[in-house]
Length: 294
Image (cartoon, rainbow, N blue to C red):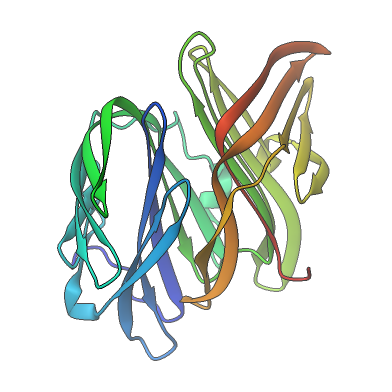
């Protein structure tokens, strides 16, 4: 394995999201290191209607982090696409998807926080949009991707934040738009504070709102968030829920259950100087909210 982090109580996971005209399918390959330094891998698959989790031993996992190549069992994930081959007593998933060149943001979405040591969780936006072509088959049902939309991000560290909200959306067409918003309780050693990062690409322009740029969190609750930075105000409201169980890390191990709506109805509103830049509602947005105190 190349460039693997040699730490105990550590995880790293990649979120490969793929959309065609009618369906969304996401794959989350990851690896985890326990408190004894033992490494294992897992692959979570999310569709509009279901979620699945597959676990792998150390010798079934391979990673080249520098060139973004992940192998779990007979399935492969890279910046060029994915090749999936999974067969159990309950489910069979197979197929190939090819990606166009990834489109990362101009600079790290974490800004200066990316250099801060001892962060509980680190977030990367690896591609806000790329094209997807190919075919997937799940239990005999075929999903065709012809110039579909892809999205790719990564998380790594020790644990997911105690409380966080995350939403992501790709809208294609006249209102071409990509949105990623995250609000989380950030833990650095013994310090806790609520921070946000938000990257919006609308009609070829990026709007970046983040704590390190002066963004303030106005509201953050289970189905609604609002942030303000200077003359920009952005809000996201979940209007419907189609949530499925996912595993999330605690001290490196996938021991926490969260709920993600891979494809639900969310309204996004961006205002500048009290003038609406966009007011968009997507039926196929992703949305998560988790609070261990609930």
